[in-house]
Length: 297
Image (cartoon, rainbow, N blue to C red; front, side, top):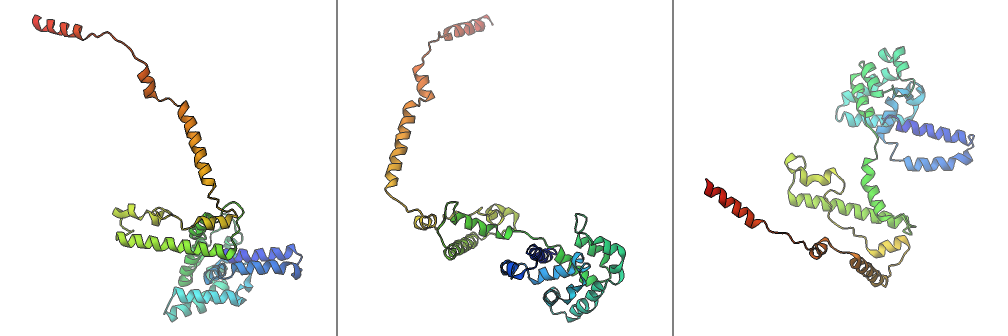
């Protein structure tokens, strides 16, 4: 979490350098990047993580003059310490100042060297754990934010729905219709899952009922509802019409293949019926020997 916003800014600078700082060339690209990142990669958590990451703050002291970054940090402070004006004031006016001005342990050469390079040995959470004891409230907040990881797991369900609608063939669905189909199908699955869990009256946190809660663990574990997509929608998306005249021909073709295979196939039971063997019975000899032993005794 502490690297997303900083790396985004670095990528923008590299784009500018690639176009030799000619705004007419790089501005359309940056506008696209800003549009995609807006409300996704510039949240208060991303901004606060950027400010509290010493890898960026120690290398660029002007970060504290960025109104957007500071406003995001203030928002996080209000959320982390709700209805506690004293703690908010302590973190913002006292502890943050010590961190930005590198007072106490923050100003040691070891602290500066520990965040100089972003390599495999650098971990901002461990850095705060070692050098942030002077500011306990800010230390706790920084460790919680910087320990957050970025993942695409939350998007997997949405992506799988898109894959179910958008095939590998050329798809003629426009963007608006595709998004509407995904929205309806995805929300229908959520409503059906909640309805089934309510009908079963299952507590997903109880181990004894874990088998009935597989849908909460594995995507599609309890989904027994077929897709609502009709052949008309699929045909519209792929650009292919549905020709019902093809169905009888397909059925007859399958029937011909089955008949050919059935003629060449001979079961094991039929072979066993054709092969007969005659054996001499030794039942009488066994009985006679058994009877003689009894009379001798």
